[in-house]
Amino acid sequence: MTAQSPLTIPMEIRPARMRFRKEIWERTHGWRSDVDATVEQIARLLDVKDLEGIRKAVEVGKPDKTYGYLNDPRAFFQVLLATKGVRQQDAVSAYHQTRDTLVQGEVMIANQITISDIKADIGSIGGHIKPGISVVEAVRKYVEQEGVNTGLLRSFFVSSTGDDISILMTHQRGKLDETIHQLAWNAFLVGTEVARLEGHYGAGQDLLVDAPAGNVKGAGPAVAELEFVERSAEPFVSFGADKTNPGAFSLPVYLLSDPMYNSGLILADNMKPGYTYRILDLTHKGEDKAIYLNTPEDLYDLALLVRDTDNFVIESVFLKTTGEQFVAVSATRLHDIAGKYTGKDDPRMLVRCQGQFPATGEVLHPFALGHLVAGFMRGSHNGPLMPVKLNGTISWFDGPPIVTAAAFSVKNGILTEPADAFDQPFWDAVRHEVSQKAQWIRRQGFFGAAMLPWNELEYSAGPVKKMKALQSRFKFERDGEPVAVGAGSQKD
Ligand code: F6R
Ligand code: MG
Ligand code: MG
Image (cartoon, rainbow, N blue to C red; front, side):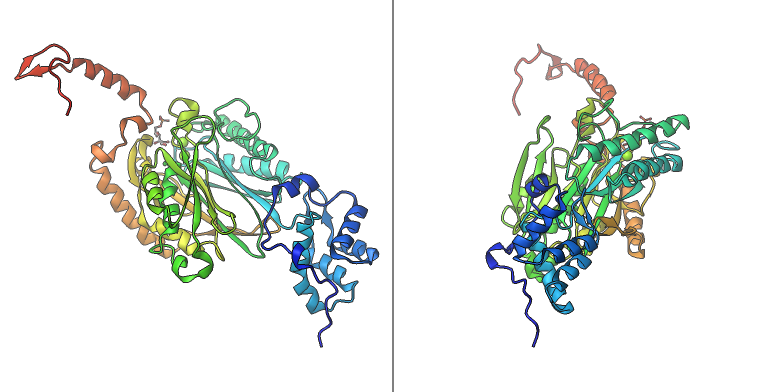
């Protein structure tokens, strides 16, 4: 006979599906600073009479009062349950139920975490090729000192994609948090100083304002953020692309709704319901102009929008069933922010994988296409996107456009080391094919589809001026004879 757990959690307070709720965090700030109140609340919620036992459990679990984590949740629950005479094996199974109830009861935030991936081009060596080691190191050191040593961050990872430096951070302060964004901004300022001192090219290029008020969105750096409740094992991929724009990620993300690429849509029951896409209209400046489309039902409409990578960009994707976000793309246009050429809006993307989300391999699959994206030399050409190794650099014709993929697992906000997802022999063959594809289109030089249309040329001032001069030299003629302007002109 198994001893019955005294912690039978009433059905009505058991969360049907545990989801993070921002309001809980805001109201409780994680663990209440008043331990006695916490203990009493736990007792009430779980209907446990033994306050001393709970107090002991809280002590053993070592709650992190600032960030709402139990440093050792398993120990906490084991002691808690042991005080009620629950056997070890029952304690483990009661662990999840209990934890969910405490979260639901607004006593604690269980494993709620934010991943912020913020990138900027703050200068590079030998042209727009790669950031100098000294600069990357300056950024890394600053984030370590001011982020980790102060307890602001739980974990971080600094890497580069072409000439862009990415700071990947885990914390519990939510998306668009001013303190986290300022930390990244200041790290980029410190890196810029080093780049300036050593004469790196384009030092501070993406820091477009003197000091951003609040978060750094719209101030130059690209931002991709996800906020969620950690699963017991939480894999995700941090993508970065250089010499292209955020629209480059739209095809791979669109293809998550295509069973030709995402086999889970037909093979895994929990993936069948599909997704909700948030697409931004980037032609609109100021506040976000967004549309939400569901797949599979709105797939054709989604295709119609995302085919236009310059104007419409997929910014996030959610599970239709729970509303959980699992894709975040930095969807901004530097060109519109600065009002002049500043480089392409080299984007970042975060994708949670496995379980009810697409498998990591399914997320990576579309990158084998080497699809044509806008960017390349002077941000003004079309060219294929090449998957390269982490910290990959730029070369031929300031390209080709590249994408890196660092796959991580995260536990209690602590990142593992990255698995370099494009560092595998399969991708060597893809890189070879993409090189050929890049040469095919480049042989066409400036002509037609090889170069971007007028409004997308990054260096548009010169060509626009020249075009105006040429326009003034066009004359109207009929049968080879000059005619008055507009006379007899026909609509065609
Ligand atoms: C494209 C890019 C490079 C530069 C090019 C000219 O995003 O960064 O292709 O546009 O090398 O650079 P500048 O104008 O800085 O000499
Ligand atoms: Mg650059
Ligand atoms: Mg760049």
